[in-house]
Length: 144
Length: 117
Image (tube, rainbow over all chains, first blue to last red; front, side, top):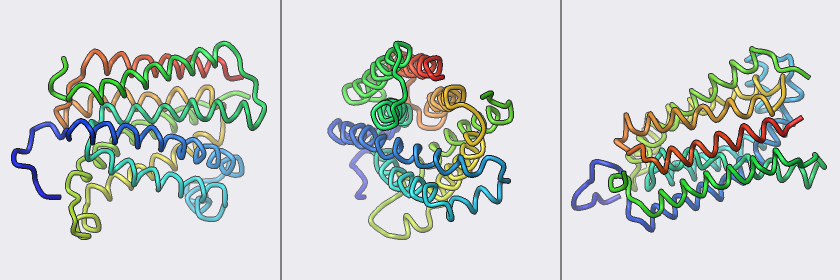
């Protein structure tokens, strides 16, 4: 990367790059949700395994391996996003994954939805929306 | 099904370690340029990825015993810590909007946990 004419103290890119970073992380939470489900499936086969057996299991249990591959893709995208956005905005955005996991569980695996869960989903989406709006609109050093 | 304390401790520690990993990832990400060596010999990215993997192993161990409704909220402790790390290491402002956003996320995750069986 060619250095900018004046490097700001706070590592914050221009607004369009910041918004791209937020969009990338939000989209990638879908990958994490699928990965988490696969890892949970695989982890059920490891209930009494030691730390070493768990590490080996990541490479030998297909669900665990696939889950971690998705995590790897996410990590690469996340590193790219971190170049252009604030950590304090981007990291909590990962919580959107909870929304995908809960919705998937209801539609694909017929888990029950109840008012508490619906409230949780709405509140999480409000929080993620607030952070995303804050990160895209206001610069890291301008808003108090 | 009950959730053993050891599972909660594993997930909590994994969450803390993961938020520390994000510090390394961000500082490493800023050192990446067009040369491949800036990725291959980037110890910060390496440390960040290693830390993430360590936290994932702890998550797998922790999640293998216990209920997600109890264990998921513990993961969100990392989000709060990240606000502090971002201020300390990257001079990012802790704004009221960010606090409100993270606060809503924590409350939402708590509700999800309560709604889980």
